[in-house]
Length: 74
Image (tube, rainbow, N blue to C red; front, side, top):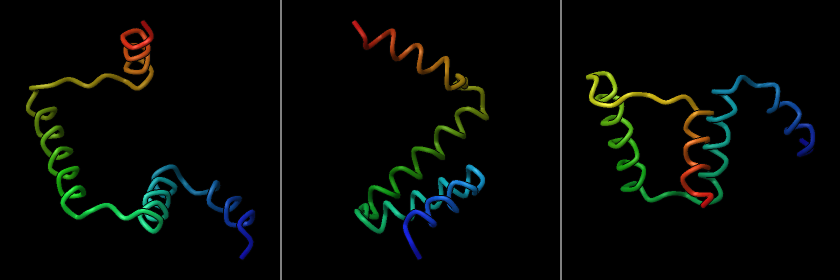
């Protein structure tokens, strides 16, 4: 199948399916060590637990980006 056709079809997928596809494609190019993947999963699990327990709060994406730009553009 032609790459242009694949791209066109992939762009029609829902966001979550596109994200999973990107992850699988990137893994096929440059695999991460299993220890790194496990560390990412542990970190994500810990952050979700802390959020659910009220230890940390969420910030929406645009707000987070604005804060980062403000902090690092100096």
